[in-house]
Image 1: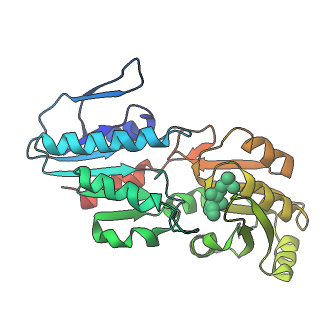
Image 2 (image 1 turned 60 degrees about the vertical axis):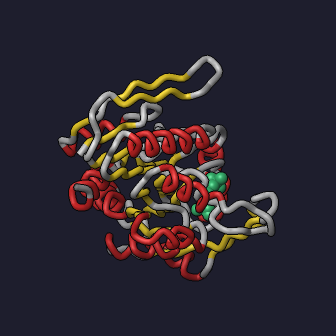
Length: 301
Ligand code: R5P
């Protein structure tokens, strides 16, 4: 089996190659003066399984999509037996339904096109909402980062703590993480304006529960799948601060950290920001490399 590492963010992919002891498929990649991509694979993939680790950067999600399409299509065309395309962060995944009539459900189109291009398997971690991808059956895999987070919480957070889901979409995953590390949790209720995407309101789901948890713990930990503008997380920290004066930590799987987001979190009263390395960012204290290596070893031949 070969592993291809997307050259735009190669740190995570390289970690996967080294820690899994896999063969790296060399490639020549350049960007023409007008911005178009050139790709050439420098190894014989015919009859082989190839696992591509993509690497997306904020503001360049569409380019990252196109590279995945070029990789999948070319590898298949060169005779690869099975092509897996792994997006540690799956761009466009938040447009997962037709919120307003006439909208493109970009999340589904994204994956559909990868399959049409030649991918046999598309996989990711902590996708925003897995339901939209169920039409692809076992050809689409969504790994969970919870094992990495529970190891982080158990080894790095001292004293008593509770978890907070910043909206109802994260409630299920936060409750599972809370069970893994055996701590209590609570959640907030968020309402967004469907047209502008702005947060209209954020409030505790159960105020008395939040009051109780705030009295009895040293640390509160907010867990969300994505930080982009920082709007959701900053509102959640601010709300938490009305009840809790201990240490506040925010955890994110996908740290896009758009300009201004960190400032918003600091102004809201956060004490520590932690992210995984699915996207290149300065807060990536937790790596998902081992999860990807395990997945490859158990599922890809
Ligand atoms: C939305 O429901 C997600 O789980 C995140 O809360 C959201 O995408 C984060 O985006 P932002 O940082 O722009 O609020």
